[in-house]
Image 1 (tube, rainbow over the protein chains, first blue to last red):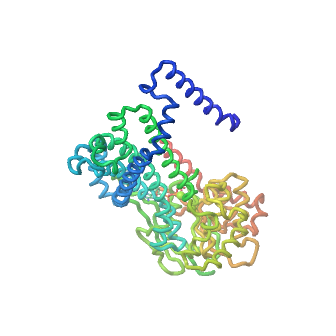
Image 2: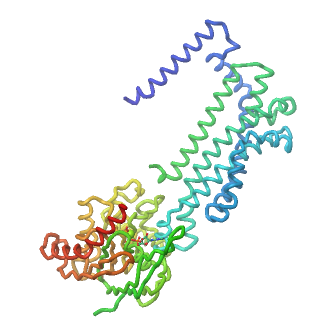
Image 3: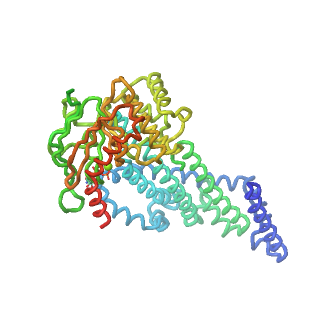
Amino acid sequence: MSPALRIGLPLGALVVILIAWETAVRATGTAGLVPSPVNVARAGVALIADGTATRALAGSLQRVLIGFCVAAVIGVPIGLAIGTAPTLDRIFRPVLDAMRSVAPIAWIPMAILWLGVRGDAALFVVAYAAVFPFILNASDAARRVDGSLLAAARSLGAGRALTFGAVITPSALPFLFTGARIAMGFAWGSIIAAELAIGIKVTGQSRAVAGLGQLMVETLYVRRDVDALVFYMLMIGAVSFLIDFGMRRAQIRLMPWTLR
Amino acid sequence: MTVAVLRLAGVTKTFRAPRGGGDVVALSGVDLDVREGEFLTVVGPSGCGKSTMLSLVAGFAQPTAGEVLFQGQPVLEPGPERGVMFQDYALFPWRTVMGNIEFGPYALGVGKAERRGRARELIQLVGLEGFEDRYPHELSGGMRQRCALARMLANNPTMWLMDEPLAAVDLQTRIILQDELLRLWGDGGSAKRSTVLFVTHGIDEAVLLADRVVVMARRPGRIKAIVDVNLPRPRAAQRSSPALAELVGRVWDLIRDEAVRAIAEETN
Ligand SMILES: Nc1ncnc2c1ncn2[C@@H]1O[C@H](COP(=O)(O)OP(=O)(O)OP(=O)(O)O)[C@@H](O)[C@H]1O
Ligand SMILES: [Mg+2]
C-alpha cells in the first residue's frame, strides 16, 4: 500500500463516519441530548476562546507534573535500592505488592479525609499512582546491568566513578524512561478520575484550582452540555497521546541505542 | 627458552552450586606456562572451564587454590595490560564505534586528541572506516567483532585474552577475521608480538592460529594435553597444508570421546 493510501484510507473512513453521525443527529433532531461532530467542534472553539478549557487543562497538568515529580523522587531511589540489595527486596517487595494492588482511586476518600476537598487530594492520588512504575522499573534497571559490560569496563581500566557514570547509568536509563512513561500514563489517568470524584464541591469555591475532571462534573450537573463533555474527553485523549509521543521522541533523541 | 609471561600454578576453581548440591569444580590443578609473544589456543568440550581460566587470567575472579602470575605478580584484579575480547562482544550499546574504541584510553586518562588519533588508526586497521558514528546495533556481526577487537587493542595490551571471539559469525567472515587477527598480531614478521590466549570451539581454527594448542578435559576441568604446532608463519598460506590437517586430526582424537560424552550428558 502506498503511503498516500495508508494515511488517506483511514482518514477517509473517519470523515465518512463523522458525516454519517452528524446526519443521524440532525435527522432525529436529538442535538443537545446526543453530541454531534459540528456541535462538539463549536463547543470546543468557544471553550478554548474564553479560556475555560485551557485553564482547567493547565490546572490538571500542573498537578500531574507535581505528582509525577514527587513520585520520581520517591520511587527511583527506592527502586534502585531494592534492585541492588536482594535483602531489601525480600523485605519490602510484599509490602509494595500489597500497596500496589490497592487501586489509586480507592484512596480518594482517605485523601479527601486527610487533605480536604482541594487539589492536594488529587495530587496525592496522582503521586500514589505514579510511584509504582518508578519503583518497579528502577529496581529492574538496577538488576539488569549486564555483567559482561561491567567486566569490559573494568578490564579497560575504568574505576568505580567511571563505571557508574559510563556503564550503570546509561544501562539503567532506558528502563527508568519506560517507567517514567508508564508513570505519566497512570498519573494522567488518575488525575481525571480523582478530579471527577472530588469535583462537584470545588467548583463552587475556587475555580482557580479546578482541573479538567472538575470542569466535567460541573458541565454534567450544572450546564448539562453533552457537546462540551465530549470535547473534554477528546482533549484528555489528545493530551495523553501528546505526552507519550513527546516522551517517546525524547527517548529516541536521548538514547538512540534503545531503538531496535 | 624465554621466561613465562603468564604462569598458572596448581590453579583450582570451584563454584558453589546454586540451591544446594555439591560444588562444581570448574578447574582442577591447572599448570601452564605461557611464553612472551606466544599464540596459545584453548580447546575442549563445553563446560571444561575455558572461560573460567580466561576470567582468572583477566582478574575477574580469583582461584580457589593455586596461583595466577602475570609477569611474576599475582593477578588480583583486571588491568589494561590484559585486554579482553568477550564472546558476546560486550560493546557499550550507548557508545558509537568511535566511543567504544576510545573508552579504554579515556579511562586511562589519555587526552582527547591523542585517543582520537589512536582510535582512528585502529578503525582503519580493522577496516571500519566510515562506521565511526554507528552504534553497535547498527553493525553486522563481523563489524561488531572488529569493533570489539579494536577496543581491546586501544590500550596496547601486552596480553590478549579472547573468549571464542569468532564463534558468532558466518564461515567466510570467520576466515577473513582469522587472517586479519593474525596480521594484527604480527604473523608476517618481526614486530614485537603480544601474548595471546585464545579460546575456541573450532579445532581447525585452534591449530591454524596457534603456536601451541591446549586441549582440556572436563569433570573436573583440567589440561589433557598440549599440542605443539610447528608450522611456518604466516599461517594464512598454510590453510590447506597436509601437516595442518594432520594436526587437526590429532587434536580431534584427543577431545572426541570427551565431546561425545558432554553431548550425551547435555541431552539427558
Ligand atoms: N559463576 C559460576 N557459578 C557457578 N558455576 C559456574 C560459574 N561459571 C562457570 N561455572 C561452571 O563451571 C564449569 C566451567 O564453566 P566454563 O564457562 O568455564 O566452561 P567453558 O569451557 O567456557 O564452556 P563453554 O565451551 O560452554 O563456553 C561449568 O560446569 C559451569 O557450569
Ligand atoms: Mg566459555
